[in-house]
Length: 585
Image (cartoon, rainbow, N blue to C red; front, side):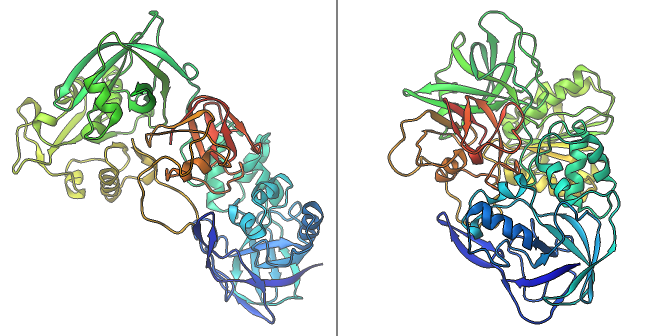
């Protein structure tokens, strides 16, 4: 008979960590007497990060006495006491390899259902002073598990734990955890997992993505929303390409046509992908990424670049680059791509954000795609309306196309391309509704972050599903750092202290190039020292939230990940550069 040994609670607190502050409820301690367990938590308990912990599905965390004994021996620790693994219930019995998802248990007056394994999270390692603990819990098949509260009631240490119903499918907590985080997945077990109704929605979604990727071949994007890895590159690293010609599109935007130096055919690219270009400016290497703005031909890629007021790379490309020059180019990459299908397509852009969606429009026009297409573009005025004529020509080749143009600098509606009138300002939810955009459309948005946030919200108001709204951001992606208290935004910069002597590391989105120094524990640590927005959760190579496109170079893993990322990507939380490296950060 299993027994509840200890009920542990703790309210969230602010804890110093690596020069930052983490708001966390990981510090829990045993309490005496009965405690009421409610739908969302135990009385007196709380979670600091409700995105990853807590809520109805993760109301109570359970860990076992036998696992405590195991870790005391494995870690050589004699100071591990109930609550240190962040659990609400410390139990004698209920091992992870026997308890199944969907099992129901009565403890005291309350009844519970097992919903998922513990979330891999750096905070358990922070609490124990063992940074690799999140990885160890998975690798040693001892994660612990969450309970949903079916019947509220009082529980207390010493209560017996009674199994009231066995979960369907016979999928143990340990097997479920390994199915998500470890390689060598069993396709049959993956199918069984999808048939367990008690499994939490987040884990169900992850398993659906794994099944869609080939019943266990590959893995979904990280739980923090990190972008999935790029497709296999057309060539490794950078190779020299020749500037065929340069065409001025507007007063501040020029298109650069690039060809091979030997006449060899170029690999195909998906509409919406980008190239990374490496320049030497003032004796220093500079790496930037620019979307392909047209469908590639067998011998030519086209990128279009706006001259930024303080942009080192864009200034060089506009003022110094000439036809015939050689530049280093990395092969097309990126996951912001036009998907095949029959659903209506909405292409929305502002300014230079037109480049990737214009490539999508090229692809649609080339196929005379029968899908209804909405082209919505915002420009400053007619003079700065990039690709106006080109877009109208492409739209004319589609059987069901709708064009809407907005100018922000005009005091009144002004003539757009082809003599049509442009709207004033930006689209609103009501104007998008008036366009007749259907709720089952796929939308692709590119432009400044605030523009995409606003337009995505408007499209959701029009009935589009959030997962059907795709965005591309040229600058660094928003940070995803669970539990960290926000700080004032700082422009990315060189890391503090003397420069390192190791290989150069280029953060392509942030425009920072710096030599590697072993004072940094990982590429993630270096990015944080440069105040570059990062995305992570476990920090030990388990969850893949930190997966990042590796545009060029090679890395070495300081802590081997439990499952390597796909080719063309790297887990920055546990790696360092082996050669000059370019990261999509």
